[in-house]
Length: 117
Length: 116
Image 1 (tube, one colour):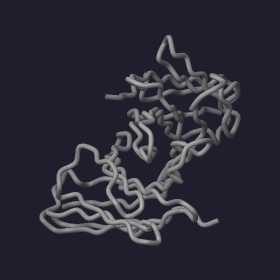
Image 2 (tube, rainbow over the protein chains, first blue to last red; image 1 turned 60 degrees about the vertical axis):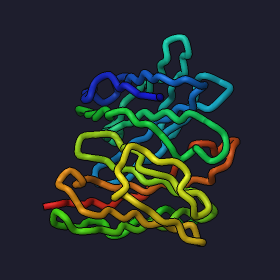
Image 3 (cartoon, each protein chain N blue to C red; image 1 turned 30 degrees about the horizontal axis):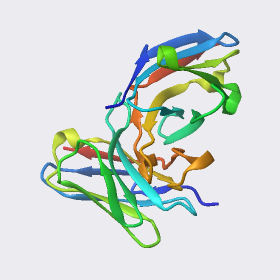
Image 4 (tube, rainbow over the protein chains, first blue to last red; image 1 turned 135 degrees about the vertical axis):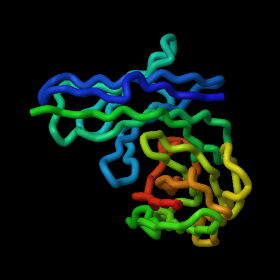
């Protein structure tokens, strides 16, 4: 069974500082990995995803994440935080089992990012 | 391109009642998934529909059921509501194909259900 652990339910940074949100996963097959962002009272929006190929993936709003198989990690980073980055971030894993299994994601518990002026 | 829309946005029910939530998928998407997000938690997979058939189910009891229609819109039905069913219910659509779109879900803004 697949699972996702996000280290730190709350992360606080100053505007302009590095953002690092940690995600570790377990999966019995090569995973597809995702980061989603959720603003208050809204649904989830895809930030970036890793499926195959290059292990460093770039997403929207200046975020990027690196897939490290040996560490089973997929940490999310952004060099310089902006006030508009304040939101809740979810890491998710999907085990591609062929066919139409793509809708089944396992999410982590989420990390709330606070950005201070 | 129309995104995923859900209705109603908020509703209040009492224990034992039944509820139906609706979802219109994004144009061109034939797969719909439903998730339950309790307060302070990550979304939990309920089930997925592909071409009007249930195609995968999470750890939810049978009183959670669904439908997908020929136009790929979907309903989530919950019978015999319990207090713990209070949550944000998210619908997500996808193209259900391999390649660059694999696993990319497009979420609606959710239906917030409160059970009293």
